[in-house]
Image 1 (cartoon, rainbow, N blue to C red):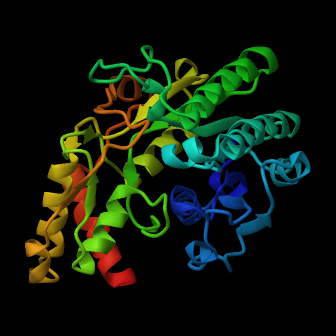
Image 2 (image 1 turned 45 degrees about the vertical axis):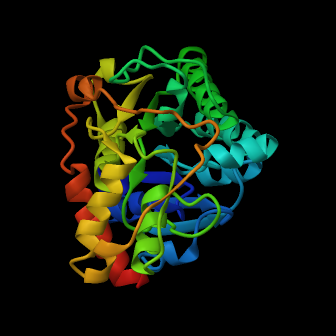
Length: 327
């Protein structure tokens, strides 16, 4: 393995929430970083802190174009593939575009990575693949039937990665993200994630709208735990740890009602009136998994993964970031 200073990481979707945090972290660790993004859901302002770093290269392109993928992968030692169209509701409204980006784009990146001789391909998988499985906690070897087009695309990604490992010898590791949150996560738009959306509503003294009765639960995972998992997956020398998938989570769950309670508590330290903002309940959302809780035993055993941020620790950091940057 090359030393940090000589290794180049291609981060697709590097202008997005998770991707830009990965870019920032690996630049700080001395790696050369190439970002491939078409800015359909990512933002240039997410790159501002390191756009002028001599070790950072931005390639504007689309993973649906094989030539863009080949250009970006040409000098990469490792690929951290984050580019995708997220959101279950978006995929239900427009399954064709979700499939084009998440499946065809994923295949393009696999082909480009293999052809470029990339050492390892680490990709963003999703807890959505657990589908209608009611078993808790979720373990990697037992999944259910998908509940949305988005979940299908993410499951197909895992199958394609497995084939490229077995047929082409490309080292792959999939990280099944569980409800990631933290700095730089977009609070705006129809498909905004629940935490930044609730934060913005509360800061504006608007009632956050919970889909359902608020008792659905999630394994909310702070961004720094996700960065750690990407680093461990990219650098592991354990032969038993590659060509597989891992839950990427904290290993605990909280209801949406719990979540709003925490947010009101932490935000009211900046503005006391936020503690009095009422909550509104709306209809349950199609395609939503009722409960989500990850077993992180496999990641602990094979990657020595020990997450540092609980939901409370992460929310305190996230709330502080949102207050300072978006108020």
